[in-house]
Image 1 (tube, rainbow, N blue to C red):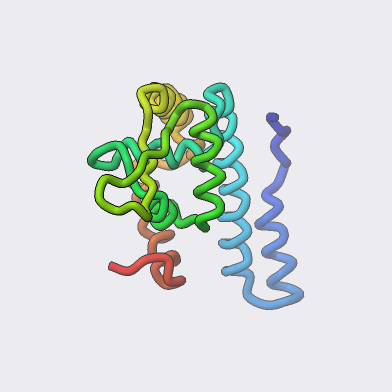
Image 2: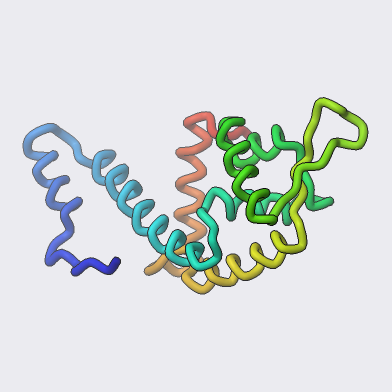
Length: 167
């Protein structure tokens, strides 16, 4: 759904008011901007994936399996890599399995572990869905490649400082 652009930047206006009434608006403006951009990006990606019958979470799972060495991973590893609760991984895998895009298989050496393997249909769906999200640049508009790299670096600093990952 396309919206008519506002004749002003509401976040900049809120920052002015915040500065006047609360104090420094630097963090408020940055966080509010990140949250708004996330909405914009999510909307574009969702629209690109919808014709392929995928949500972003299911698409990410297919890509993760595609990137794996053997096209299969234990569900626990999927949860770690996608940074999701085990229940969420189970729900994603249930839906992908019901659509014939993945299958659960027993681990060859660990009876306690279930592997999730991408199917040929899953590989095909991932390929067409990837073309769709690449076509909309994953929803990211208005930045050069260099600016996108800088943005990624800055956001990684926030993620690292918040304990999202270590290097």
